[in-house]
Image (tube, rainbow, N blue to C red):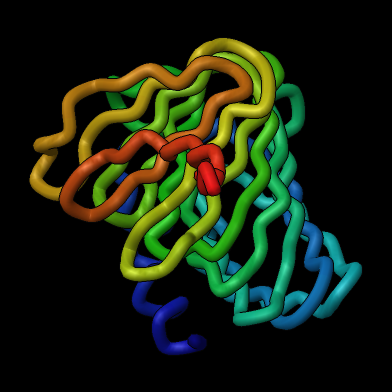
Length: 194
């Protein structure tokens, strides 16, 4: 994991835009959590250790690891590994942009500003305010569940071929690498007439 985190320092240091005003707090909850801060310094966090990060950042969470990310005044996320996540401002994007290049499970709550979440497989979620969960199902499939808040928009996918969809509060959607599938309802069991 450590060589990958050093390779990603380019994401953090290579930003040629103005210094970002996004501040985040990272707290390791379980397992190994590594991060690269906006200055390119690598930190390894033990459980219950907290670090404040300014601007862009990159975090890797090992298998069976967990961490809590908090963007003060914006929102928070409970993330379970294995996971690789980066965040920071981006030109032309409203608010915060969070990229998951690997993800097992995350629970996210946004309170004030809009944000864009980029998921494995090229899927993008647009969220203004609300709480949602993302869970990996295997074979590249993800389940997105909007628990509360404003509607969530989903688009992108492999090659950007997935049309924009809207997910209402309380609904779930399975994203597969080749298509989007609405979850099926269970059928009523058949009874035999004899």
